[in-house]
Amino acid sequence: TFLENVIGHEKFKTNQYTTRFIDETPELFQGAKRRDRATKLLTFVADVTVNGHPEVRGRALPNPEAAEPVPPRFEAPIEAGTRQKLEQLGPAGFAQWMLGEKRVLVTDTTMRDAHQSLLATRMRSFDIVAAADAYARGMPELLSLECWGGATFDVAMRFLTEDPWERLHEIREKAPNILLQMLLRGANGVGYANYPDNVVKFFVRRAAAGGIDLFRVFDALNWIENIKPGIDAVASEGKLAEAAVCYTGDILDAQRAKYSLKYYVDLAKELERSGAHIIGIKDMAGLLKPAAARVLFKALKNEIQIPIHFHTHDTSGIAAASVLAAVDAGVDAVDAAIDSLSGLTSQPCLGSIVEALKGSERDTGIDPGVVRKLSFYWEAVRNQYRAFESELRAGASEVYLHEMPGGQFTNLKEQARSLGLESRWHEVAQTYADVNRLFGDIVKVTPTSKVVGDMALAMVASGVTAEDVENPDKDVAFPDSVVQLFRGDLGQPPGGWPKALQAKILKGQTPYTERPGALMKPADLEAIRAEAAQKIGKTPADISDDDLASYIMFPKVYTDFQRMQDLYGPTSALPTPVYFYGLKAGDEVMVDLEKGKTLVVLCQAIGDVDEEGQVKVFFELNGQPRIIKVPNRS
Ligand SMILES: N[C@@H](CCCCNC(=O)CCCC[C@@H]1SC[C@@H]2NC(=O)N[C@@H]21)C(=O)O
Ligand SMILES: N[C@@H](CCCCNC(=O)CCCC[C@@H]1SC[C@@H]2NC(=O)N[C@@H]21)C(=O)O
Ligand SMILES: [Zn+2]
Image (cartoon, rainbow, N blue to C red; front, top):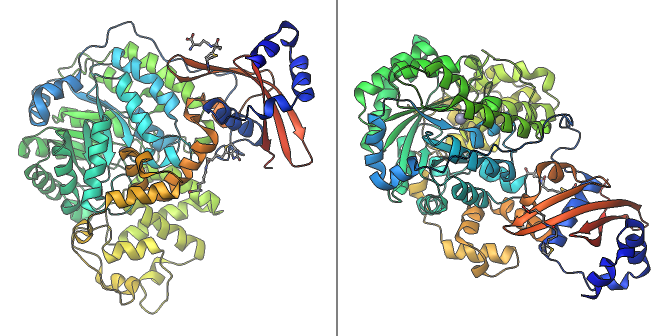
């Protein structure tokens, strides 16, 4: 075209000509105001270059000396793995296959729980998907890659302006031979409230269609009624239903009789009877100690005829010992995180567990050299997320007091910090334990852990003590989430809610004990699709089933996300340093929009703020000069 010929001409090749040419002939560029993806992306890059990104503002910067993340390239072909095994055998057959394996089967949690626990769930699809091929070729022995669900679904849209479904589809495509695993919060889906059964069913259908093979289904109160619909939904998709029992208390401590060995074995038997293919022990706070692990897994292996999968966190610093004790006691599968994203509130160290079992009859068969190469990649990635690192640098036996789940520990500390309570963290932790006792000693995992956290922060911030809460004559303001919990909105704890406190909290409201999902009328999915379309100015036909699932789970987050997409385009294609910190004059970056469509973006100069408070950023896009104006937001 005219532009390419004129601009492309030799004399315009160098910057100052290009810039002058544009300034002297602005009318040429007005017409080119096409809002294509490249222009939208440049708008984002210009915006973050000028204004920074809210998520990292004022936070620690990546170490500029650290290595760039380069995913290891293994030459091995992608050989059949557990995904093919499931396709051949079906879920029940696959479970039998697991029982027959002498080796310990390993789940790598790096793509989900590890960064949820260590980096506030902020890892982007760009870095996660880039590792998938290396796992497929280098670590085909894995049972599964835990890569979806939990907080990742919400955070992707809310803070990272990217689509969680796109992440799932891309991992699926790059690692076609390993089971993909997600964490499903039972009746809460990937949200924080209870949804009608048809919503959970719809979500599971979309997740299965998108590539999830193994669904770990749990309930935040271990309430079986709330787990069953999840098991049924997963089984009806022909996928693996791992019904998870959340571990709390201490089966060897007589003071914690409510959560005894019998409690856990009975729960596991009931879940097996309910059609689970695998039983998960979800030790979300890392409370299961080595001696207790030996007792628990021995009992489970005696009483249960389907495989047992152990998930724990290393907050206390003793998780690897508990995993090895569980292995000795016959557990079939264990979760671990890649070395450079393991430990503390994350899972125990995958490479060390592999080495510890090397040569034993339960040898995992995983190549330590591959572990090291992947760990080096993830270490370089982790550096780019320095902004989200927590203060926790050492094991904390305090976890046996407060019993906070790994993922919450760092988030609650952040919340306390934002409330100016950082220096009183140990009071918050003690109050968290007091609240648990007041609530009758409940399982604390999303969303019940959030309710306990809300209450603990409210008490510390307002100086309300546990005695005040228990005192029927002392008026106490309870957070909404506490009222909803005691009303029955999240289900029933073993033995029900403490009656006196429930009466004080509900102030005359009538609690209910039925399963919330059973009381809700089915959601009208097509009506909701139309509502979503109307909210973002599109037609129902524009709202895919995955969009609809996102909207149902998080309506406001979804519509905000769509607005960001309309404004900024596919920001998920940007390398992480560019996404969070933008470019400096002279920087050039390649952006693979899709196969064979690469944008070469050169940032030439950043102008000054003009009288309208706008800033011009000068780029070259695939060699063509482009000027983008963005507001100065500071
Ligand atoms: N606290 C709210 C959620 C807050 C929404 C946070 N959203 C984001 O972080 C993504 C939006 C990016 C804004 C872009 S980044 C480049 C440019 N710089 C800016 O300052 N703004 C734009 C909740 O919890 O819901
Ligand atoms: N992934 C590629 C990276 C090599 C960079 C290739 N790109 C260029 O040389 C930039 C100019 C060509 C991009 C063309 S311009 C017309 C079309 N529209 C676009 O947006 N991009 C292409 C590799 O591995 O080689
Ligand atoms: Zn976990």
